[in-house]
Amino acid sequence: MNIEIRNLMKKYKDNTALNNITFTLSEPKIYGLLGRNGAGKTTFMEILSGQILADSGQITIDGENPFDNQKLTESICLIKEGNNFKRDLKVKHILKIYSFFYPTWDQVLADKLIKIYSLNRHLKIKTLSKGMESALGIVVGLASKAPITIFDEPYIGLDAAARKKFYEILLEEYEAEKRTIIFSTHLIDEVSLLFEEVLILQEGELILKEEAEVLRDNTCAVTGSVDEVESFIRDKKVFEKKQLAGMMTAYVYGNMAEADAHGLNAEGVPIQELMIYLTEEKKTCGSMSKEK
Ligand SMILES: Nc1ncnc2c1ncn2[C@@H]1O[C@H](COP(=O)(O)OP(=O)(O)OP(=O)(O)O)[C@@H](O)[C@H]1O
Image 1 (cartoon, helix red, strand yellow):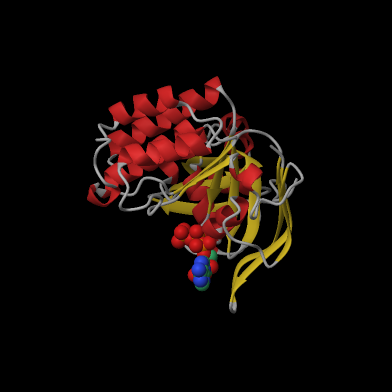
Image 2 (cartoon, rainbow, N blue to C red; image 1 turned 90 degrees about the horizontal axis):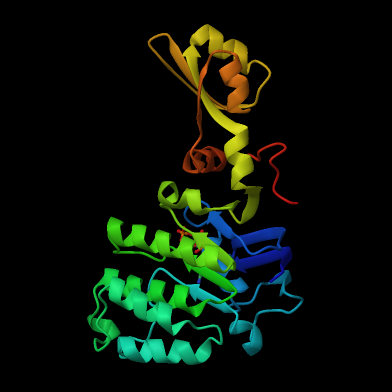
């Protein structure tokens, strides 16, 4: 589905949550939507899923506005950090409701996931632990098979093994059938290998939109003697330098092969590091620009 966002603005009183963002998500991909606390990620995901209205600008999915649009809502599944389900309903009721709601619902997958996460269908939501409630969110998000599936920090309380299982199945399902998956999380290191494209919001503005592979190929951490590294980075954009006992590591925009050719040790820069750097101050990544 083609998602077009043009000059989207959203304010809460004097607080600007989204400030004139413009971009297009035209392909089914796994998108990582990143940013510091309060950057506007949840606000954007709520507008995209038709739950709230923007103040101005346009948002369209295949040409239609998602707000109050029943037909489109059947194609979008938003799983939030918590409170996704009515507290007095049982797990089995939730599964039933969502299976009716989503034309693309996959009951076989839902059953498989219920088993993997050892969820008891007869328990009421209010009696589930935080981790179990998150697991149910994951079951619904994945089994919905919604063409636009959005996970907003979906795994509060879920342990590392359960999160790993989630990533594995997400990837398996995505490989079997591509769909647009938008994933927002603060556990970037854990998930970043899943991302095909990364979007970074800061203070309501989109400061980066780039394919993950381009980011990986064009940023590196080079280490060597201070003189060697200083000479290598002279004509490069450097976003951090660290020095210890005569050695220097510099994070730069450049590729590893070039650093190797200079006899320097080069490693990739984790997306989390890049996000932290870019959001320290308002910076954009030069040619790795925000809008395409
Ligand atoms: N319902 C609301 N009422 C008032 N202000 C709000 C509301 N929802 C969000 N905001 C404000 O809008 C800004 C963006 O919030 P949002 O929740 O979209 O950020 P976020 O990137 O999802 O943050 P986090 O990573 O902490 O979840 C913040 O300054 C927040 O305080």
